[in-house]
Image 1: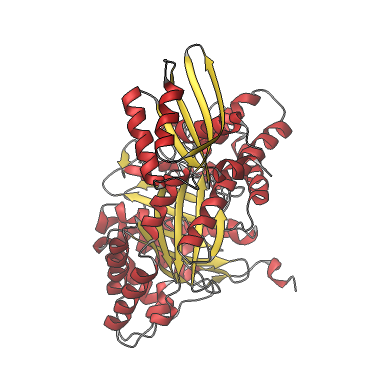
Image 2: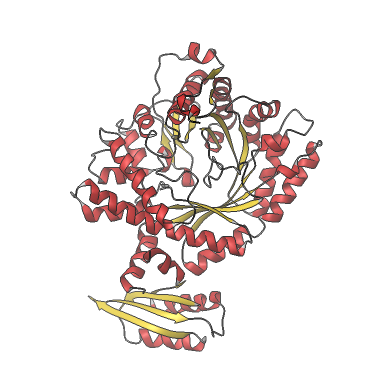
Length: 449
Length: 89
């Protein structure tokens, strides 16, 4: 039975607390687009994407209008391109990236993810070509996102790829004045069905096409916690759970409706709490509401552990299929509270690294000094990968070398990507460590059989 | 198909009349109404049936938007499923 207060509270969540569907992402398999001719492969890629996703934006807009739920983004994810381009006789995969860019623009989506390679055990020739194409590809396209998976719990960490990615991130930053790095993620234990950018790709084992939805509601959780000031943590956890339930239910409804109208199977709801730079839509402020003066002080990791777990527990009941990253996001530039805490010097990269042990993403949207070396970047990647590998979770790094800037400066990315204060990195060198290469072996967990 | 119409604004004479008349003209059947006035602020929630409506969802929504602009109210219409999904286990 519908209750007037429930109706009004839902409207308040949407109007005042920033409740929204962050993304509807259509995943499309491109494995059948492989061709010895790169030009023909690119044509097949363009044709397939524009065929399957031609109604994605209009259906998203119709659902938005009928249900009164803002659907902020419509996106596409594809098979990691290195697997599709491998058959083509060519030295550069930039044309593949351009084909994705054109297809995405024709469909009217805001991003397309999947210019990617999975190299956790080692790189194929195609993987390496793709990785080396990334800086040029991202500088010559607008809406394509790229990702590279360099480690996993079963395979260990590919330190040759880590070293290479340190250089790729630097080169991408230099070519694009930093902006390209917002579209590039390095993963450990990447998932096959993540609907969020920049790490979305349509993994192997996924069907021909799929609809995945990412919800968001930090503002709603924050508002709910204001009613339980001073209450013990079990009450806090229950409050977050119930709120996460409602948020995820909205995602489930939208996902099922989109799936029906687009004649595409429903994949998953990713119930991650994804912040935006808008006031009142911050994960950091939720942590502060739990009793921390500033996000990043002692107690932050514990607070985030509670939040991340409560979000999952509430969300899992609400959906028939939960997947993707599903936890709390801590992207510095996209969270008004994080930006403030970083500017105040309270939130540091070392603390963020600790926080990544207990939440669903990694070191995300962090601006580092423009002169940070490729080896230091690689060492940051290695640290994050080690956390993911040992703890059997997904971790990732999306770091933005701020060319020409240093600590004290701010980088403006605009829109949902916000702005990032340049954060200090350690000065002591990791060069000899990174120079070793090879593989950090998989931890004992991989022998569970 | 049921939808929820929510009206929020300053209380004035004739709000319910205006909305019901507009909905009737579009063939929309009103199933339930709940309304309160608190400190001069008017809030109304209606459950409506769009099954026999003579206009599409978009047209009904636009008609209500026009009415909202005329009267200085906030009027929204949303399919009922969103509220059911969020508030029932």
